[in-house]
Image (cartoon, rainbow, N blue to C red):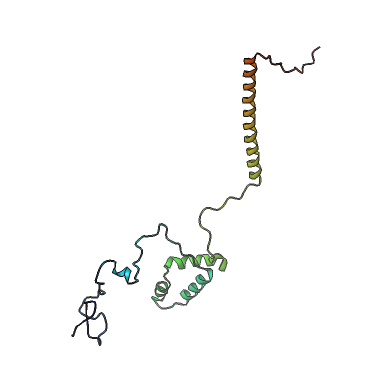
Length: 173
């Protein structure tokens, strides 16, 4: 086996032999040089950060039907496993999709919204909120008016101005 020296200083096999068949090691050749050499050559290292929340896969109804038809057509042992590996699915997908299909063909296979169901809005809720806002506004105005009256009483007391008593609506007499 004849080795030749390339520009980078790494040894390579004879050009007639397939690449990677040298010795028993199956490791790829390592990039020689500084750690930033990969970035300077235009190779971007993968982002080591894991996303906070993984993205949930959503399958359209037509895709689910196609996969179910292919799975039903499988007759030999191992064919369904090969189908699942090829499509990147799990057997639980097939069983869930079959259950959805039994519930109502294409509509049963359409993706459903996840989470809590929205409560129907009460038609009186908007009116109630409006009345509560008005009530709070009127309470604030009442407190303000009472504070002004208290100040007027104190001022009249300091100045010695007698306050008239409100007339009684008694009809005695």
